[in-house]
Every structure is written in C-alpha cells, then in structure tokens.
Amino acid sequence: MNPWYEESTVLVTCPKGLPPFLGQEMRELGLEGVRELVSGVEARGTLLDCLRLSLEVRTGHRALCELARFRAKGPDDLYREAGTIAWEELIPADGYVSVDSALRTEAVNDSRFANLRLKDAIVDRIAARMGRRPDSGPAQDRACVFLYWQGTDATVYLDASGDSLSRRGWRTMPGKAPLQETLAAGMLLAAGWPEIAARGGHLVCPMCGAGTLAIEGALMALNRAPGLSRENFAAMHLLGYDEEAFEELRDVALTRTRSTLPGGRVLASDIDPGQMNAAATNVAQAGVGALVGRAECDFREQEIPPGVGLVIVNPEYGARLGDVAKLRATYKALGDFLKQRCRGYRAAILCGEPDLAKCVGLKPSRRIPLWNAKIECRLLVYELYEGSRKARER
Image (cartoon, rainbow, N blue to C red; front, side):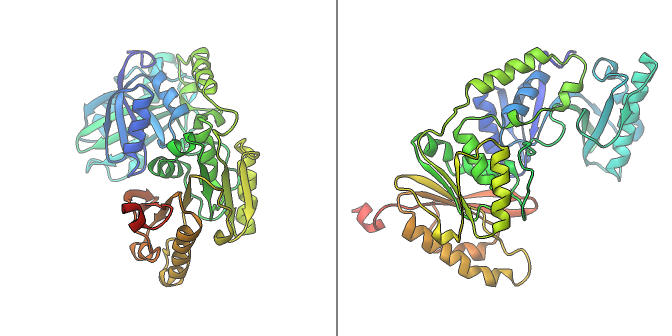
C-alpha cells in the first residue's frame, strides 16, 4: 500500500467540543465519509490529504493516516504485528522517528513502554532490510508515528502534522494564560464570525490577552489557511514525499487568500500593558499588524464601530477558590457594557463557571459546550438587538 495516494481512514484529532466544527471544515474541503467522534473526526483520504488538512483546518490538532489495525493482547503482540508493516518504504533508514500514543488498555500500564515497543518494531524492521536504523526520540519535527490502543485493538497511524497544528508559528509571545489557537478558531466558528465578516461586520475583542482571538478572526476573514505560517510538517520527512504536490496545495490555499478584510474592522484591547505588548508582537508575526486595531484600555472604554459585528471575550473563570466572588462585578460590568454599548451586535463569552454566567444579566440564545484544556466551558452567545425586546416582538 502506498499511503500517499491510496485511501485509508484519516483521523484528525481535536479537543472535546470541537468535532462539529472540525467535521464541517473537513466536509467543506471535500473529504468523504466524515464521522465525528468525541475528540476527533474520521474520514476517507490519503497521506497527501492529511498534508492538505494540516494546511487548512483551523480546529484540528493532528492529521493521522491509518496504516494498520490489529489485535494486541500485550507488548509482544504489538511488536510482532507492527513489525509486519513495511516501514522501510515509509521512513528513511538514516532519518529520525518519534512515536506517541493514546492508550485505553490494561495490556500496558505506561504509555512510554508501548511507545518503546512500537519504536523497536519500526527500527528493527528497517535495520533488518536496510542494514541501518533511524534515530528516535521525542522531537516531533520529523517522521512521526501514532498508536491508539483500546482494549485488545491497536491502530497504527502516520502522523502527517507532527507538532500540534495549534502551533501556527506566529505566537512568539504567549502572554498570561494564553488561549489555544484551535479553541479560539472554534469559538469564532461557533459564534458565526465567518458569516458576519462576509457581511462587512466588525470583530471586537476586549480583554484580548495575547491577541489570539483577534488574530484568528483576522486570518479567518482573510480566508488565510492557518498552516501557511508553518514551514514544517512531519509528513515532509517520509519517503515518497512529493514537494511539488505539496507546493500545489499551498498555491491553491494562497490563491484563496484575501489581501484586505471584507469591509469591517478587527479591534483588540486589554487593560494590561504586558498583554498588549504580547498582542502587538503576535499580530505583527502573523502578518495582520496593519489590520488589527489595538488599544490599551479597560473593556468598558473599547471602541464599538457602528453597524453589525461580533464582540467575543474570554474573561477569567475564577479557577482558584475565592476568585468567583471577586469576578462577579466584572461579569456584571461586562453584561452592562454589552447591553449599553453593543446593540446590533452579536456577543460571545467563553465561561467556565456557571455562577459567573448568571452575573452577565442577559439571556443567551445558545450555550455551546467547549473545553479549555481540562475546564468544561460554555460559549454563551447573545443577540444584542437594537431597541427593546417587547418592541421587536410587537
């Protein structure tokens, strides 16, 4: 089997809560057999499709191409079955390979041991046929193999992405408690930002932190593929990699990229000077410095351009004991700001504490489950209509 051009199962991993948005992305890219899982989306495709997904998807972490499925009751079974895969046709004998895994099996207590046995199977097979073996280690910047082992069922994948796709390449200043890029993209998709942007609407990001929401929103409005900022993917280090085919994928993505926003503005602000310094560095690195307006100010002083738009916020959740009480006033003030200053807009707040959500004082039209690392959150979406609700109903 040549995974570059022969179809198998493709799995793109993502955080919980994001599969509906990742699945939609994959359908729009033309993948067939799309099936949403708890923390990922499956489809039919090739290793070349995985490279395209690595370039294009905004909410995925890794694009994996299935090589083999087999039963493994223990480490010896894993070694034996994995040794039947023609690794010498996939990984250069003088190259490098990294092995990672996700285990839900009683066969092995430590994932590091499973990784070691799979790595041994790979390099022993290559050494037996080529007379030399590749180096191995934890770095994920070259050939990568992934193992999913549940019960007695093991699946081995080639990881086309390597380092997580959330690492776009532009965030050189993380700031404090940075929002992961993939979650930021999921928030924007869930809140309907692409449709608002297409109508010439504005994106307003108070409490912007290191600028992640503003940058992801600007890139989305420009229709710029998130992987275009990265120069390296793991699949580039596999045998059979076709640089010309990959450049064609890049060219297709580049031709769809706009040079200017569709009509609205992207604005970001934070009261913390350190956060605004980080945001300034990141927007410049992302190539959208001229498109994202920035201001060092309290969120209540944020400019709201006339027209339609989206206000999107990731405020503190109060993870530590006692923080919730301190933050109630902030959430109430945020609700007042939305009611008084943002009429005609849509608003979205990522909230990890239900008690704080009540302090906003607005009834959300949608509550979308999302996960920020291990914190279960809700993206609260509000329609901030002009005028009173009773007047609209009349």
